[in-house]
Length: 119
Image 1 (spheres, rainbow, N blue to C red):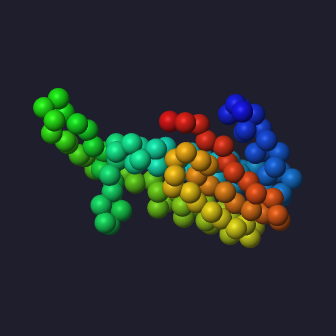
Image 2: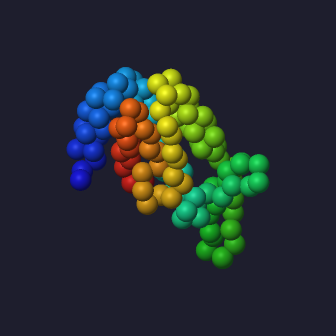
Image 3: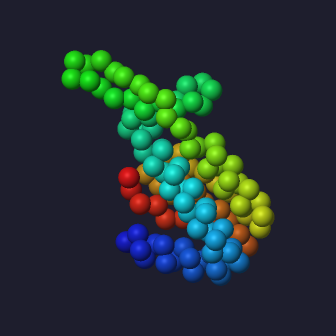
């Protein structure tokens, strides 16, 4: 399926479930942030420490590794998605595996998965 078709189906399903379009779009944008972060984390481009601080890491030609602090979008995105889902009583599931949809939420027995482009 194409991203455009997934996006259209997501919009229709959200409307059918009673999720306002601005809320559905905000959840989709945060889901995309999470998806991109999880891909980069899985590929070793970003590392996190025990406090959740993220670092973007690069390998040099001589084999050494350099890491620089970078913002971690995960806590904020998860918090915003949870707040939006709480507005209309949706059950929320977040998947850290970048091979699937990062966010699923269920409203009135309708499961919604915001589409994400691959980074």
